[in-house]
Length: 191
Image (tube, rainbow, N blue to C red; front, side, top):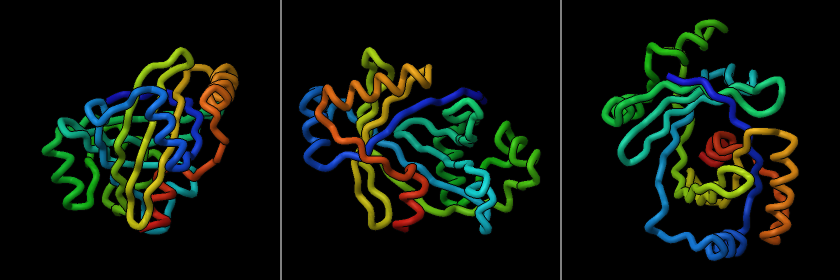
């Protein structure tokens, strides 16, 4: 179980920009990592109303359950409970979340029971993730429902400095900034 602050800047990419970024950083199929996110909320979307996001993420050899909550100083607080791959597969098959842990406790503190949550959508991402001088860069290709898109994310430790570094990165890569909804919103919309 961990709690960490996440500060990231994102832009959607066209298919051509995605290929150009992959070529620029020499990204290959050997370095890609696949992950699938399963998104949850109550039927009346009480998490969305709070601007919270909740997912189970499966990697090929591990899994985690993460609750994202907006931080007052920018970015998000991420509360994460580790899951075994077998446990996560069982939970997602039953469209459930882990009934105990740090996330269950946080949800209970605002009157939401884990049993009330339902699976809303899933999204699979091919991700290339690596360090650059500005922070941790992720180049994503995602599939969900009827959707398929590309995204560039820069995770940083300082909001103000990170924003400047992100703008510099966009200029360096000759990319147009295209804001996009977060993955959970895109996955639910295209379900």
